[in-house]
Image (cartoon, rainbow, N blue to C red; front, side, top):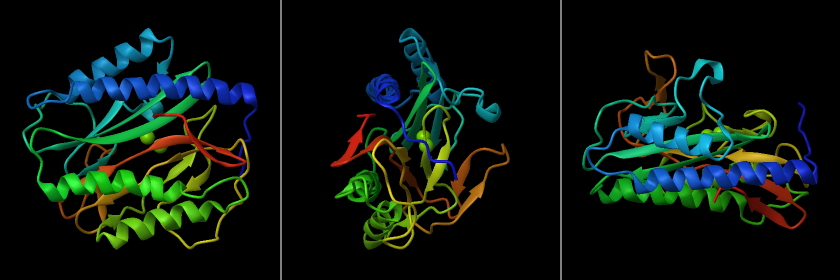
Length: 248
Ligand code: MG
Ligand code: MG
């Protein structure tokens, strides 16, 4: 395992990537409505990222065809942007990455479209909250597994499934670096966190069972039971006294 510790300069570049990404996600949120297409959201994201002197991290990554991952309802992650209009009651998870001067940031949000059933809205809220539960009391010197464990305990206490096949990750000059950051696992396990480590922490939850299947497009991951799934991700810096979130 090769976990990089970033210098102050590197962290500053990652913060700039994170700011561009946060603003991209805010722009997308403002443009979500019934009848909108994820292809249009993809174009908005691409144009904005380029206008900021950055590049989309996902476009072309292992052949991925879009700037954003746009995953609707039972799609967990890695959905393609399409020309299918969003419908009232849908939810859409937008995952996006930005690379600025060689440094990546990665973040995801799930948004409701129109009027969404209360239990689905709750799934979105609770998945976001599980991220914050995961980083609560985390600082340099803590074990990585404490993040994983706290996310799992929170989501399972609410009765949700926790997806295991996909995990968070280190991030920096590469979109995906060591270590893996699972959303489940025992307390007090894994590596010791150090100041200057940068992680993408990304709980993925399901309203039904946690089992997932791969779509025939070879990319998109869906829930096996067809029930909705939510995703929430931020890139963070581990510090001596806590966790700095750089994609808000
Ligand atoms: Mg992501
Ligand atoms: Mg990620």
